[in-house]
Length: 343
Image (cartoon, rainbow, N blue to C red; front, top):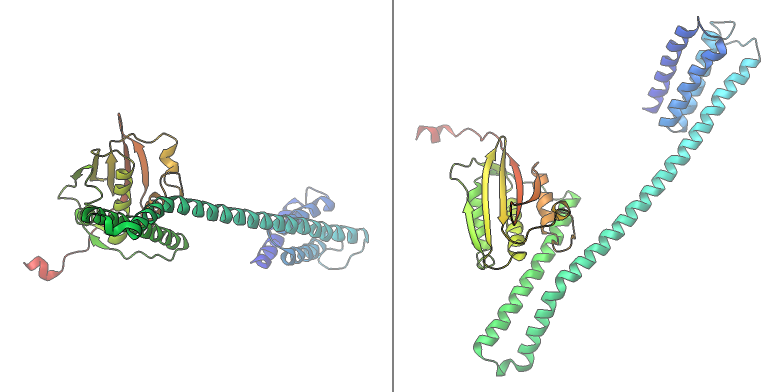
């Protein structure tokens, strides 16, 4: 590619120089070729630059140096012009290579620094999220081991239930870390199918029934919502993360509303809570990995929604509360089979 550009640069420079030949001295015409050398040197490495230098020298010699139409040089001064063309090209190419090398080294340092920052943030986030369940599991299991025989049946059951719940939370955290890794590496591929959003939401609400039991749940999903072509398991994950986030960060008995509506060529799905709400500055940062209080759940939501070519955002509700909304593109559903139409 670079050598093709070198030949093209010589051709263009020659055409321009021929147009200027009648108005300028031949030395000034040589500057057109010098500009072509500099432009190629800035864009490509040394090989194409040397090629364009020799091609320009040959073209300039053939078309403009007396006797024209030959490669013979009568005036030795033009040899200095040829050497200057090649020398400027080599200098510019060397400087450009040096700048590229420095930029590459700087980029490598920035990648290493970002990798270290993400690693540190990951460790800090995981250690923070694991501290509470580990403390509960340690305390409950220690109590069962040391004096379980002296505890009543209800106390032992409560401790066992506590251990189970905290172990489940730890398992879900590890699952989220692995899922985020797969999303960022591109290893997760969509398995799309035509699904009903109310059915997807129903499966999520049944699964989260126990966790949402302390809140007031309102579902507003019209029966006439069109089908969406999505990976149902991943959209379930988005809804589950948003609902769990709403329940986790609002007081008991707070209203949580799940609703959806069609807006143009998109379906807009909303999870709204009427708790304390978010600060204005947190509305965008909340979707970043390891943002304080959000963990990985919302970052996973954003990655999944963007994988479906949708958008996700948070906004404050009038008065009090926060709405998390995401969109899913609507597509024309496939035609029904002939036998279904016959029925």
